[in-house]
Image (cartoon, rainbow, N blue to C red; front, top):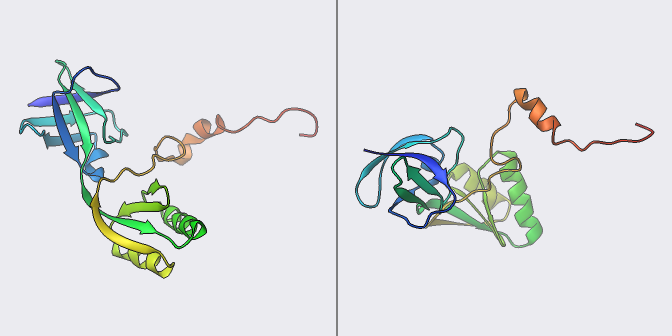
Length: 163
């Protein structure tokens, strides 16, 4: 079995491909089948989210390109840009992974969210498409209370009198 253990940024060649939907591209340990039919296992650093186009490498130099699989998603458009921002706000408020395009939103299918979006006046269509949601303001990682020092280092420093 092939062990994919490292994400790399550049390669002069691609030996195989691996097509996965978004929910599986979030897993760091996973048994998969490459396009060639070969069995492989992902052994990646926890917290890595694979994106379409990412390259993975084995210890012996095999390079595999990740492809974002077609999957059931909603495409959302709105009557106005403001309405689309309002929909994005409500989805973000629910921590929904969201892909943002020029004049559209894309999210994984969920009938409750579809009903909310329709109630907001959105046009929601069910399609099969690759799903590449935004990584998030801090690189995609979910922060917890014990990450205070990491957040504190991002805070702007104010100096001078009156503070």
